[in-house]
Length: 269
Image (tube, rainbow, N blue to C red; front, side, top):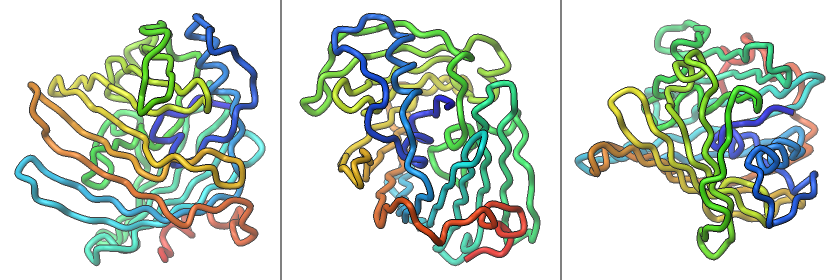
């Protein structure tokens, strides 16, 4: 299984620990392998409400639905926007491969252009539909593409003991695709999921902070139901995106392979 970025881990939903690891572990690589070894719930559906806030405090809201399904070799995910009207039926189809040698695929459909575009590697560091998320945030990351360092052995996030681990891309190509120089991730020792991250954005020398909150167990799977992503430059907030998840469900029989095609993407809701 591939190691998903924290945002992707949220969207694809991390499960309970599948690999035992001691809370005293000091090897950053072993911790990340334990996170990487998590199982994901199959045939997932959810609704997401996104509030985007700019520097002046003005808000824009978006609502979308998502579904995901495992296949032999990876995971497919479909995101479709419900509202507002100007983005209704826009969507993103992602195919994330377990094989680190295979490049993940992403397609964006914009009804205003009546056109589906493939997202190239050089475009994946760009903003996803005006949010603080990037296309790279929505895709997978290969464990072997990064070097890991234990920054802190024990740090508290909302009362939970965490490891703080630095992840740094091994090559320039990975840096360009993700748009990040490096990142720090606070991993819950109890749940083996990320609780917050700090990422160093290459373009504009900005920082991006992500906080995963309202973590609940759904069918024995830990699911963060609220995520706040803040982009900061020179100590001041540039923008933020708040994602609130609802109607999270697993093992949904209406999730089928036919949901994850370009044709289905273009059909919309």
